[in-house]
Length: 363
Image (cartoon, rainbow, N blue to C red; front, side):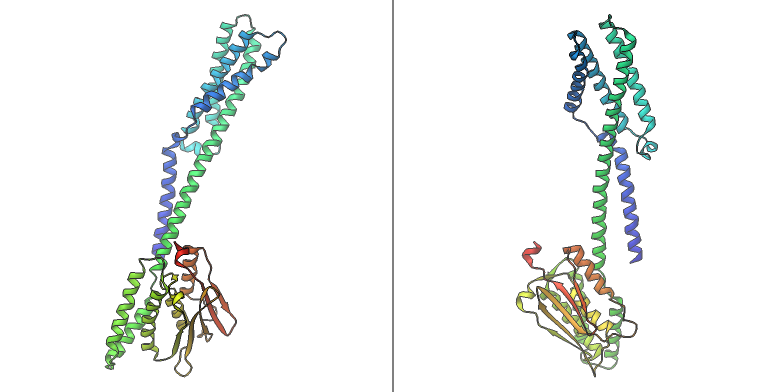
């Protein structure tokens, strides 16, 4: 079991590494719609002309040139920043914001805006280049910062969403693998004790030795068949219990009784394989079993639950133990159905209440 758990942990670590590698290889998959890029650039150009429109001596030529150059700058910075954000090195990924990339994009923006301001000066030669240059550079830096931070946040959100999806998938895979381990859990002590009982029966010439071998064979056949399913009918589960009880009766020779009070409707409901068998095994394993005072195990239905109960006569050293089988059942009900089983212990009577699972509810 420990080796399998280690394998699961290693597989999880390997999957996390593959997620990181996948994201590294697919950074450029972040795409911004051309409609968003172009429309936002045009809007920025129009907004940059608003102060000129508000002036007393409005010059439409100046407003059009200013809007066109601002839109061109915004368009250029969109694509520069998309490239900068989506092509990140391993070093830059280790920090939330790549300052080297940010400085590079600001320098590129300053150079582009300087070129556009020079073009504006050629078109509108009557404007003083100095004040205009300062104004357009400040405007360009602000536009550039907004573009870079917006794309950076968008890229981070994309990466986080993908990682969360993949981690949930890993979690689901691990739960599935753990559930498979639970389904495959067979107590090796039971097989050891059964073989010892069989050995004793053969040595004494017990006539029931052949029946014991057949029941042992049936029990393990049920084990193999039931592992293929997450849920089986309660009637099929009781066949497993009966085979198990026959084997235990051969060992304890009447040291316990089992009373089944389930009706036909309950027998048609569903249950995780080996649930009742594990509970019966827990009763026998943790309580005193004797011919003089047999352990009475009762199985019945009440309040939409299957209930299995027994008087508490714990063996020495079993006072704080719930048993591996019970923990197994708790995990399986939680994994398959998101339900909890009820455990009732009043000091005299021990009860386990299993929620009924109807076939139409399961489907």
